[in-house]
Structures are given as structure tokens and as C-alpha cells.
Length: 401
Image 1 (cartoon, rainbow, N blue to C red):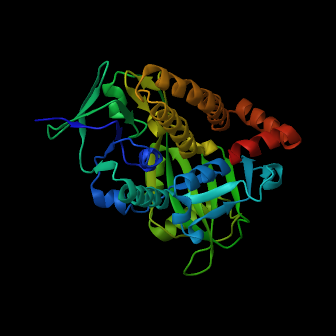
Image 2: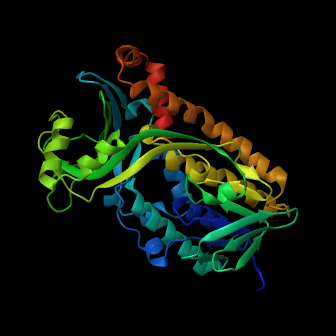
């Protein structure tokens, strides 16, 4: 069987993989995207509970890739400030948008809405340039690379050859593993339950991160419910895995009362407004971002704990960096899979992601530890941070990207 040839093969048609393909379209490159999901799941993704906090930089990149204007204004919720609570204390560290120089810190958009916009934007570029092929319902069974070419083998037996293979599948990337790239994986032993809920008290477009004793709560402020005009937020509850599944199995009314109690009724009465979804908490950082004619991007490159809300934002940064390196090589008549091109991407992306990745690990270790010394340290750190304007400005800058 003759191998299909392209310039770039992207494994994974999630929002990062689709955005990378979109960024490369129209530059004279032939791109193939391989995805194990069926086409219907890619083109019409369903609500999965996840709300993505987008930085100002991410919104700029989404405009550049043609996604932002495909998202209805009603589906974009402004994020104007953030509060961090510790235990039962009513006080909080607050980061307002005025510290960032913007009218909002960022925006909240549902993951499935971003995925739909990424697919539609890519389809528009395909119609204009005819340079991207999407192979849906295809699973990769093997990856290899040599001096001149790299190849992907599909479970059906077909072989694809390209000058560069990019893994954009997920943080547990089987493609990365097939290339022999190890990763630092940290299993937090917990899972997060995500859903939408309506509530009596307004959220004032403020995100909450509440480090309780034995649980972590997050509140992501959304636009009002379209049918009832009730205040609405995305709720994220983090608990040990068994406890999360017990809460997720509660009847809707009992679940609503349970979450209401966990929030100490600070939002008044709360009501479940969506399906519920549970995700494991595992952070991932590979020892390398590149190999011979191979690169990782998105969660395959940096699988973040969601506490600092930078997962997809780092994915877009990776698309900008890797896509920019590939396009610069293409414009110069240079090989986009050359080692020098990939090393440049790796160095830049490591500098952009490693400090916050390590800081996030530190934050989660300190703020999810319920021992007495850790509780005291948390309280001291938050009180001190509340009075340090430069520190609060630095957090605001991180949130805006």
C-alpha cells in the first residue's frame, strides 16, 4: 500500500490540534490531521462541563486564527476579578481587572464552543486553500522517524509520511509514548466534578478559588441563564476520587443542596443547571517537547492542574510558537522538521511554561494540605499577599496572559 504524503501530520483534532492546522493553512503546506473520534463528535462537540478561562493574549490568538468572531457574544462571559479564600475565613485575596489595565481579566467560554469554533474556522480555510485533510475515526498504532521523513501507521494499516509529526492528542499522549518521550506525571489522587449551577446571589463576574479543609471549590462566573435569567456559574468541586463519584451520583435536588452547603450558602440557594462531569487530576510535563521530526503541543506538551487556569492558554501559546517556527522555515525554503527549527520551539515553549507549571505544583501542594502548619502558612501567605500591590499586579498580569 502506497503511503500518503504531506508536509505536516497533526495527531489530535482537539481545539489545539485544529488551531495549529488553521494557523498553517494557506502557507503552501500540505497538512493532515488524524483523530480517533468520529467526524460528528469533532464537528458538533457536546457540552462536557469544562469552562475555559481565556487570557487577553489567548483571545488575540483566537482572533488571529479566525475563532473568536465565530463564538456568539452570549457565549462569552467576562471575567472581571478573582478571589482566593482559605478555609472558613470570610476574607479573601482579591485580584481586580483594574490591576491589569484591561476592562476584564479575560473571558470564560465553554470548551465545546471553542472546539466548534476551531473546527468551523479550519473548514473555512480548507474551502479557501484545499491544503488540510482531516482523517476522522482513525487511530494511530505506530510512529517512526528518520533523517528525511517521519511516518504514522493507522490501525487499519495505512501509512502516512511527512516531514514533521506533531502530537496534539492529550496529556496521556500515546503518540508521545510511541516516540519514547517520558513525562513527569503527578497524580494528585483527586478528581474534579464540573457542572453549571444557578444561584440566588450575584457573582459580579468574579471567579472564586476556595481552598477549604478537605475540599477545593472553584466558581467560574457565567452569563445569566438564557431561559430564566438566573445568576449562573460553573462549579468545580475537587475531592478524593471516591468522594467525588459519591457526590456526582446524588439525585439532582440532593446534589444542589450538597453544593449549596459546601459553599456555605454564600450564593444563596443553588440549583443544578446542566449535566455533571468528572475528570481525574493529573499534571504532566514531558522531559522533551521534541524528537527527530517530532513535536508535542497542547496538553501533550503541558498538562496543567486547573487551579491557575492556564491549560488551554498554554496550548495556544504553543500553537503560536510552533506554528511560527514552521511558517518561518517554510518562507525561507527551509525544512520545517529540521532539528534547529524544533529546538527553537522547545526552548521558547519551555521558558514560557516551566515557571508557572512549577508554581502551580507548589500552590496545589500548599493549599490542598489540611495539616495545622499548612493551614497557618496558607493564612499568613494570603494575608501578606493582600497587602502587596506588586504581587497582586503580577497575578493580574498572569491571568490576562
